[in-house]
Image (cartoon, rainbow, N blue to C red; front, side):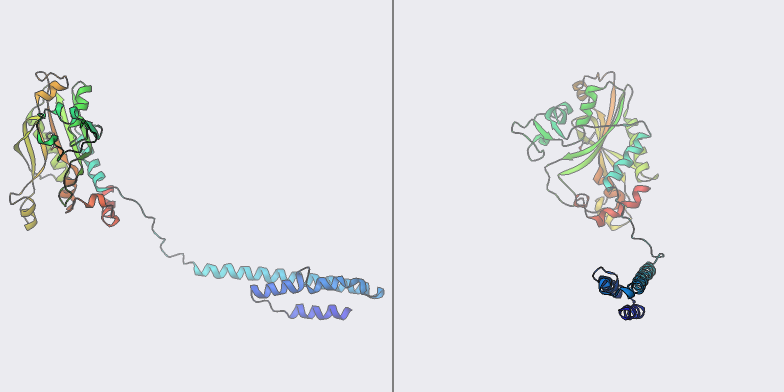
Length: 343
Ligand code: PHE
């Protein structure tokens, strides 16, 4: 019987464990409770009494030999595995960059406008996008038969045509002036809606910035200086502006605000229609009727107001040729503005 143990011992000694598979085979053969060493133990009771002692000693030696061989091999193999895994990690490789989002170009322009005007005391106001006729038209001195009130121009949202999507941010003038005693100096920025066919130059949804200032002695020259300051801050210190006589029901006198764009390239001729000047908004002195509609005495107070298109300013500043890009959410377009946000 002792021979059986010795033979097993030789087997254990010569068993080569060079990978996980060998290790598992070794475990099943000699360590497992169903393995060969376990079965030698179960033969113990058949061993003649005089041999029992020696058999027991040898068998226990064999058992611990197999166990320590198994443990040794297992540790060696797992160390090998981690060290070889280490060599596949190249610590000098640059990491996969974390994708940062970027601000939308219209938000960048909007923030810039707010920043520029805040330096000369303009606050920020808001009004609803669903407006009533009073705030969007009547209080702003639109006559009852004004074409802007037609279905072709305005999106009305209910049957009796009393509520509509605001067609301009001038409605916020009324909302503020009705509620706050002058002096008031504020901007109103937001979305406006007009029933227009969508093209590279026009959209039915766009954004405006409205600014107005009402106080005791506000004059047209304050308006002009404010617009010049803004244009030079926004487009560059050499920017020239021009105010062209125009008409709005809610301002008197009214003007169209142009900036000098130049005529250096053929494209300049095209976008300025050969004049070198580009329109960026409307402006004027707030009409006395508008003041009265807000319970402000036009003999005591005066005010100016202006309104500009944000898309238009973003297009000019960044050379964007198609208005539709702003709402298409193409990341290739949007990503170009990542670094500008930080500037
Ligand atoms: N509300 C006018 C428009 O949408 C712009 C404007 C605002 C003109 C304020 C004069 C004063 O075209």
